[in-house]
Amino acid sequence: MRLKDRIALVTGGGSGIGRAIALRFASEGAYVVVNDVKLDTAKKTVGELDGGRGRAIAADVSDSAQVRAMFAEVERELGGRLDILVNNAGIAVSGGDRERLRERAEARIAETFAGEITTHWDVTMNMSDETWHRMIGVHLNGTFFCTREALKLMSRVNRGVIINMSSVAALSGLDTVPHYSAAKGGILSLTRALAREVGSRGIRVNAICPGYIETPMTAGISPMMQKVLLSRTPLGRWGQPEEIAATALFLASDDSAFYTGQWLSPNGGLVIGG
Ligand SMILES: NC(=O)c1ccc[n+]([C@@H]2O[C@H](COP(=O)([O-])OP(=O)(O)OC[C@H]3O[C@@H](n4cnc5c(N)ncnc54)[C@H](O)[C@@H]3O)[C@@H](O)[C@H]2O)c1
Image 1 (cartoon, rainbow, N blue to C red):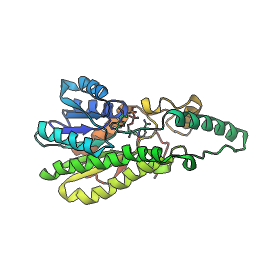
Image 2: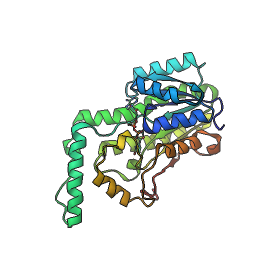
Image 3: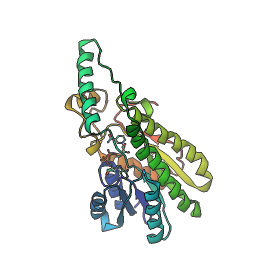
Image 4: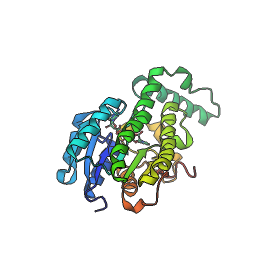
C-alpha cells in the first residue's frame, strides 16, 4: 500500500486518465476526492473505488468560486488535510472545430503523400477569443485555482504532493491545437516555478506529459490520423489510462521523494528528448 491513509483530490476524475488515477490511488490505500464538472460521472468513479473510500464533488475548475467551495468542503469534511492534488481536468477541441480540423488533417496527409502541401492549418488566425479563453481557463486557470487552495492546506503541515497533467503538446507543440499547446506549456512552466517556490515547505510539484492515450478525449481522432500518429510512435500503439495512473502513483508516493519540478512523459517514444 503505497498511499496508505493519504487523502488525494483528482480533478476531472469522472473519465479517462483521471478516473484511472483515482482507482489506482484508492487501490493503494488512499481516500480519493473525485472532482468533475459532471457530478454523475464523479459519483460513478467513487462507486468503483476500492473499499468505496472517497467522495464526489462537482466543480468547474475554471471557476475560482466553485474551486474555493470545493476546497471548503474538503476542509470541513476531511479535517483540513490534503496530501495529494492531481490537476488533471481538461478539454480538447470540440464540435465544429473538431470536424474542420479533421478535414484539414486528412487533406494534408493526402497531399503529403502526393509530395505537395497546399492545405494550411490557419487555426490561430481564425480562433475566437472565447475558444482561446475557454482552453486556457480550464487547463491553466484551473490548475492555478486548485493549486492555490491546496497550498493553503498543505502549508499548514509543510507536506504535500502536486501532480499537473501537461502533455507532449507542451514539449513539441501541436500545430492543430495552439491554444491547447500554450495551456499545457503554461502548466509545465508553472510546475517548475512552484517546485522552487514551495520546496522548502516539503511540497513537491511535478508534471506528466502523456502522449496519445485511449480515452473519450481522443476517441474522435480519425482512423487516418491515428495511422499517422502510430507510424511516428516507436512502440506502435497508443497508451492506456492505467499507464498514466502508474506514473501518477510513482509521483504521488514516497518512491519519488527526491523528484520536484520534473516532468515524466509516458508517450511510447512519440517524443524522445525534450
Ligand atoms: N488522452 C490523451 O491522449 C491525453 C494526452 C495528453 C494529456 N492529456 C490530458 O489528460 C487530462 C485528462 O484527459 P482524458 O484524456 O482523460 O480526457 P477525458 O475527456 O476522458 O476526461 C477529462 C475529464 O475532465 C472533466 N472536465 C472537463 N472540464 C472540466 C472542468 N472545467 N472542471 C472539472 N472537470 C472538467 C471532464 O468532464 C472529464 O471527465 C487532460 O488534462 C488532458 O489534456 C490527455
